Image (cartoon, rainbow, N blue to C red; front, top):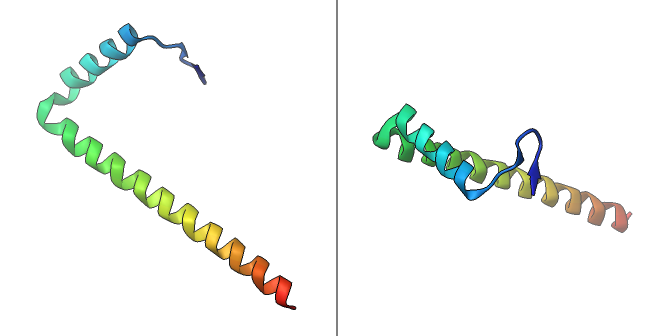
Length: 65
């Protein structure tokens, strides 16, 4: 799997990246960062679900006319 600009990433590279993040942010900040990331993903999914519901309701309303 090739990401946009990262090329081929293996397990060794991921471990190095994780260690660098651990060194930069420390062990106490990482759970807070992941919690914020999780909230962002959840919010994005909720927004996508709302858009899908709006599209479906518009399609059903158009079919009734």
